Image 1 (cartoon, rainbow, N blue to C red):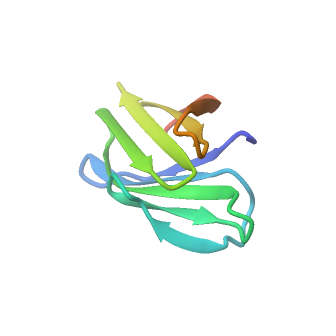
Image 2: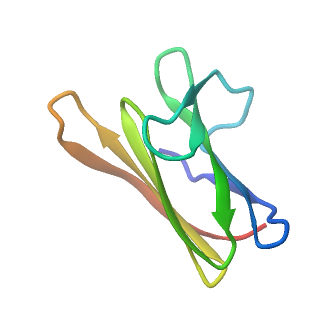
Length: 104
């Protein structure tokens, strides 16, 4: 998985946080099975980006779960980190990327 571009512009302490794993245009949008947000996937099911609906700029931890992957984002003292965990059919998981970025 490529390094993600983080877009986060909070207003009054919270806001939507978007992670781009590929340059656009994006494919189909899918509502997360668990968590508040959406994922963007290519026609072959590859994760292109995610949007977390409402993230606190000081401290937060959220998870978006989709059929083939789970994306976690954490914010601690304004620092953003994320990880992508690929899920396979057997129910086991394998870690994808884990990156840290400063808020935009």
